[in-house]
Length: 429
Ligand SMILES: [Zn+2]
Image (cartoon, rainbow, N blue to C red; front, side, top):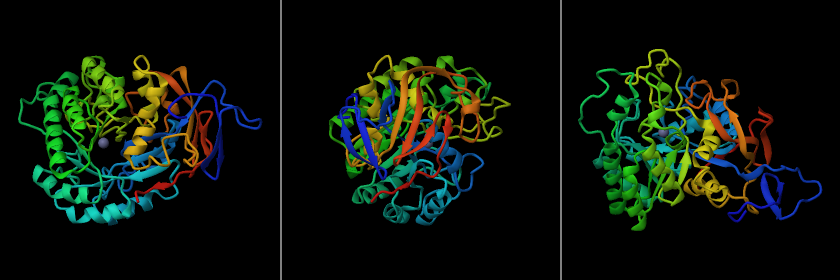
């Protein structure tokens, strides 16, 4: 409360926090030495339903989120079919999520070449922002935009006070490092250099300044891009940026070859680079941590072949946002500084800062109880997302979720989902 950890009793009525008392009330449920904090908000998730539900669906995805202490997630406009680039497609996605909202879910719309006329319809329908790619997205029905497309779209978004989320990699011709041995991680890392990210970020900052359109850089992995993000913020531009748990929990030096579970774009980089990302989270250059949960079935992930060139780029990690981030940050950060990176900051980003992300009267009763000192090893059997394929399996963590409360209802407790459908749509108004 008030940005500090302290003993308190939280009273909840009809899904809303109604009273706070800084002492224990007689009949209150006692969380012992565990921490009660605002529910986690994962602002970057790929659920893939409708159309690619065999990759991940709302049912499995939102149960996994609850098990990870996440009470609200924001779903990306790809890789469902249809992609969310029209109001009609958005309605189909909402329909597909009905009766499978085990946590709260919001949605982003997509910007692709030729759909500018759809943007205002998507915004009116309640999307939390508009996402685009500056390089191939991985699926052909969500093509990347060019600078010319952005010149047309950004004034529309600025006029509607809607944030543009951008996957920042601008590919330039370079030697094909994967042509020799496509199972070498170092070759994959070299195939997507920091330069690609740095140049894309520079382009977005330039356009942000020109159009006064809010820009959010998703999954920053190149620490070299931090200087220009810091300068843009200093200048007062409406720019925000996230990194992901896998960029700070893992390091390239430790990634085995032929292990496609680690493949994502941009790639997981070197330890020294990642140390700078962690620092940037603490000094405000990076605003929050998300998962970019982007699962795929085993064949598409090339589990057998280990071919990093052919494998789907995306890491499944929805359930691990809290423990992976805390394990990565605990030696550098107090809980007081760490908790807002998963709660208050992403809540503000998705436009829910007035009712989510804090424990305060009149805020939604989205809460998580967890033990930051508990040390544990993850096992496949406890994973609730669809395909039990993840670099986080078999790894060690600090921080275990005990209980997840969504809109005042306990959804997850004692390693089990105990109540379904407690979530709601989160639409931007
Ligand atoms: Zn993504």
